[in-house]
Image (cartoon, rainbow, N blue to C red; front, side, top):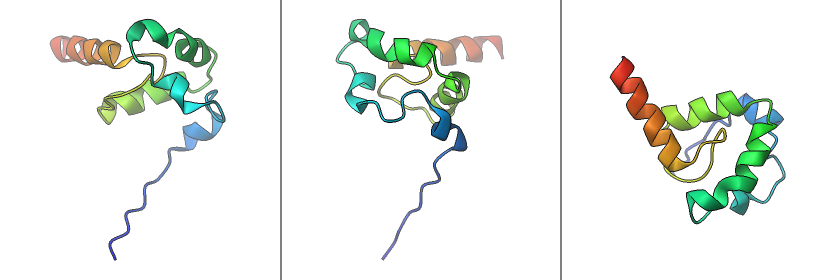
Length: 82
């Protein structure tokens, strides 16, 4: 049996979204992301969360206060400035 163990980043233990309904962070559209972004705005580990999502090319949801579309823009900007 092949068992893959996924290590959970330590910063997630301090995340403001801990215990919040995950559906909030997977809105149907960017316009529906306001509730998730409000939680992220108060989060002490928002920057680590966003960097994790960018590094791991997280495709869905709101991470570190950024939607999928916003994360793609960040990646493009970083590529241009590199």
